Length: 429
Ligand SMILES: Cc1cc2nc3c(=O)[nH]c(=O)nc-3n(C[C@H](O)[C@H](O)[C@H](O)COP(=O)(O)OP(=O)(O)OC[C@H]3O[C@@H](n4cnc5c(N)ncnc54)[C@H](O)[C@@H]3O)c2cc1C
Image 1 (cartoon, rainbow, N blue to C red):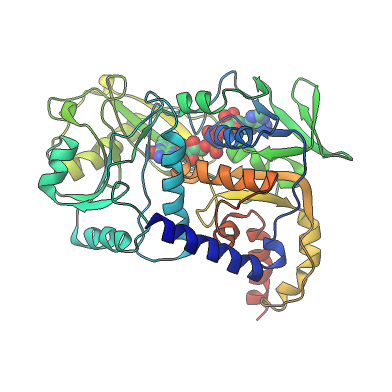
Image 2 (image 1 turned 45 degrees about the horizontal axis):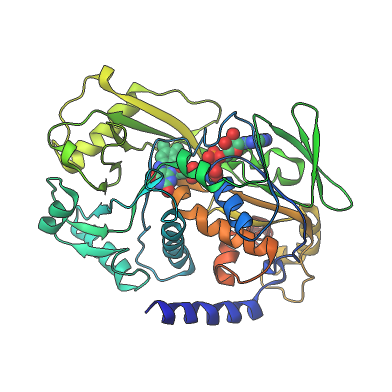
């Protein structure tokens, strides 16, 4: 089964290589050092993918340790994202889940534990949606199968109102530990250093640091989440902040038996360092540092008890701990991963799209040579990062493409420039 899928994927790659729009054809690869700005799961998975390809990698993170922002939760869930429609987006998320398992299974168990994930089908509609997703055949049985309530209770150790989609190979990632393992062997880990500006040189990029020093690199990947848009050449990237808070609760008699992660709109993990992580809120935010709010604990626990009844006893507020952070999201809820366009050059070269959205014969894309971005990973960043990293490492170093052209096109940052131009035609017409 896997072989047939791989062959289909290869055929699709060939087909789409031929059909690519000029702005979908990535730039030529270039040799030399790669510097990654950021120190979360995006930067760490990318560093690992580049190191595997024998590249010299430098990583710059503004905090004194890795994974202090979006990737700083004690644990996050790695699971499939079910959707009933067989389109490129659904295929991308299924492929990303499979890639995440392959990457994280190589880590030690203290960084990733494949404890299993149950996505509960609390309504008939939800059950049909999950079943329709499985019927697309994008996952192996260990990655996803429907289970009834009795089996689900046996697998998870919890008293449940329903069964659902069971991913035996899914599980819990401890992002801080994962980032440390993934970056082991890196050539230069520059912690406590903030990149403040980027400028082009004859052979690549000069990175200015907050301490006044500079660093040169043939290739730079901006993997700094919301901050990816702080540089002059990337200021147009459409990134927005969504605040998330998790609640860390002591167990009750029933919940202490939980062996797998439960997902029900919110989620609940098995015990991690003596506490369950219950989450997560998802709210608009103006950015900036985040403090833990008692009202958000109440919302997390209300969502939990609405779905799972009395799995946890009432918790006094002082028993609760938590963590709040920002997710970086994009207008179409898909990450930004790929080469960085020459923004002004694209507006000029592709201006005809504002008159005729389907205009052909347009020139090859002007790229900022050696500059890439990996940001906007959103609420599923731990799951999608390894595949994005493979794709980018392939674009940077050459070699087999990690995903078909139509899926690469979904992710490439320049899609927002093309959409903006095409919308102008809509407005004019
Ligand atoms: C509450 C919550 C729950 C979540 N749960 C899950 C889950 O269960 N499953 C899942 O898959 N995903 C989950 N996510 C999403 C996931 O955690 C994020 O998508 C992911 O961690 C983003 O990783 P990142 O590396 O892009 O960003 P970050 O981890 O934010 O890393 C960016 C890094 O760049 C650094 N940086 C920024 N600017 C500069 C600069 N100029 N110079 C140097 N360094 C810089 C920052 O300090 C930061 O460390 C959750 C997120 C939240 C907030």
